Image (cartoon, rainbow, N blue to C red; front, side, top):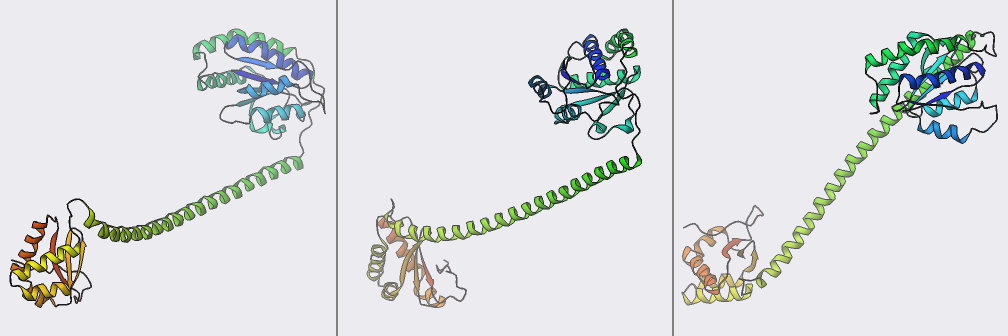
Amino acid sequence: MDIFISWSGERSRAIAEAIREWLPKIMNSVKPWMSQTDISKGSRWNPDIARNLDTAKAGIFCLTPSNLKSESILFEAGAISKSVSESRVYTLLAGVEIANLRWPLAQFQATSLNKDEIRKMLQDINKDLARLSEPFSPEEILEEAFDLWWPKLEEKFSKLPTDAASVTLARSEKDLLEEILELVRGQARFVTHHEDLLMMVERTRYENERRQLDERARFAEMMAVLSERDRKLWDSLRPLLPGARGSVDQIKKAICTALLNSNEVVASEKLEESRWSIIDNTVVVETDLSKALIGLIFAPKVLSIANMTMAELGEPWRFRVVSSADDTGRVPSSTPKE
């Protein structure tokens, strides 16, 4: 795992060099990197710094009273923490109190230059190695290595050069209140943005539901039109299909002739005057007679002659007589029951 070590100033640089040399002796899989030169105000960042910032999964920032406002420190801290889920930032405090840290450095895990704090930082880095599926040390081995090498690091910490800022100026009450106000305003902006986002999601959901209902209505209307068109097309093509060798007029003529030959003159005449069609595999004859007269005129014998005639023609349909004067508005079945 690549670890970016940030520094600014002589004391900070001495801490960074000590950490860079000491850390791989405890964890073989970590690769600490630090720039060799300090960056003055207004200078361009070295391309190596930008490249290592981009690949680093963690950062260690060596803070002293003189570099708390360093532009390079603040820039590098923001760059390496761009992905909270993949980056972790540790701040090493040398002569700095946590209350003196400004944003964004105040959001990171602060570590003092003592044995317990450094041990805790190494344990967190070891957990990050496991999380990133990189080689990590078992806890007991890590503790043993730390106890072995800690005196070396402690010795270097005891010989650090003095900081350029010999006196740490405590932050004023006004300064602290201004930072709190800034954080509260940022939180308020976040809450407002969150509420706007929820409203946008709800509005999008409502518009999607309306669009789906409109599409379903249009689909149902289109299906109704297509069904009616298909029914008419089916009625017109049905006589031409295999097994339907005769047209409606041919069937009508054959049945009426068969009824005349059987002395069913009245039934034949009424069928001649009626409207014939083919609906759902059935030859339907629509007459203006009432249901009672239909049952009287088209007795079972008449219907039997009609069905036998269609069978002789090779037609696969049934035969029905219905009344156009039906009150229900539906096409009833007027085939008399035997």
